[in-house]
Image (tube, rainbow, N blue to C red; front, side):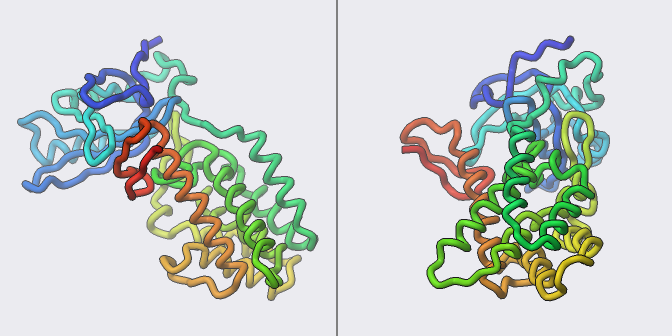
Length: 318
């Protein structure tokens, strides 16, 4: 087996890096001078990190583009470079080590447990989601939730995003549970509110279900499919709901569909127009931003501050 002694969680600014990592994503970027570099998202069983591939001094823009196209996300590559902190984020910089990206590391030489980042207890999340679904009193709405989720086997394995929050195996189910718990709490907290808790719960449990169709398992990771940006997860989620609507009152089904379509709040094409839709939107945002902020602040020292790579705002540890 190939030895691995450097892990994402242990990378610090100033250190030399020469170790195998999963490449979760590769994106070609443009330099200010018109040249090209490659932005990588790398991971192992300790977490995810950033890597910029600048290439050797004689690599042309065309060569950089060819390198980027050849990278197969989900595979393991030898990353050889140096780490530095840029805008508060520690990232690996690769120059001459670009040659190592020509081919992935043979999988038979790797110990799989060192490369799969899955911090979620899937069994526990599945059980807790089951208990949340059981709180829905209307049989037709409960069946809708169960049938939609059961029809998408990838739901419990897929990530919730490419990078910014819950971007790991099991992340979608974890984010869904958090959103449902907070949305139900919000609905029960507002005085003199008569929210439809069945509709609120169903909307929260199904709000991101379309994301399960936006990723596919590849190698040691999940990679985003073209549908992630070409169609969007809200449209895919709505399509999944439409297949299982027969046993739900049309008005209440329309309300659940509105929640799914409007859960991005003021940033979405469809804006929330009911208290239930706003409750799911706020819960969705809270889950996403708190997860991102917690991850960005996780390795800060006491009294340290930096720009969060995931939450995109400064984070501080007291």
